Image (cartoon, rainbow, N blue to C red; front, side):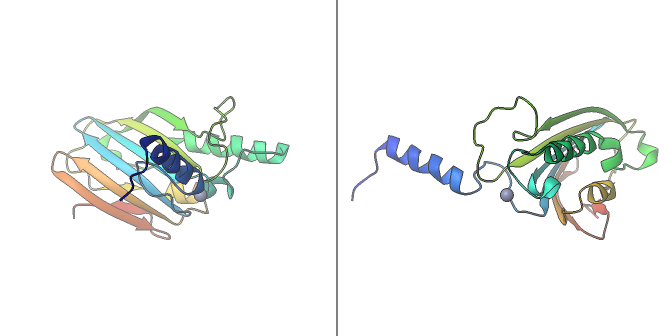
Length: 178
Ligand SMILES: [Zn+2]
């Protein structure tokens, strides 16, 4: 049996990454987003990952002025976490921080990996008065903003354990642990 030298193996792996979705995290499925929900006693962190296609209908860099404008508009929408996610009012949650990683949309982003699929990641941190017993997040605002998005798969980590959850249009509530 012949083994591939390590450098050849790495090259093959790298090329596979250009040809197909390649990431350690969730699979890249058009129309589908993943959400990691981390619940702490006084905060909630939501890590959203979705194909750029779900935002714009393409995964390349914006070319025309109109495409650049559309990209700027979706980045702005993506930043508005308080509109995308609605938390139960009695928890007293306030959006405390947003980080967006959109390699092909942000000005000055590295040109690396400028072909093939592209994901957009966004992390939202909410500070809350309390989060105990939190069992759902309304993601209707996300569906309203990004009409190509069909469903959301979530992993939830909280003091009472790990849960998986899923919400598909036209439903709006991501619920777990019931
Ligand atoms: Zn794609």
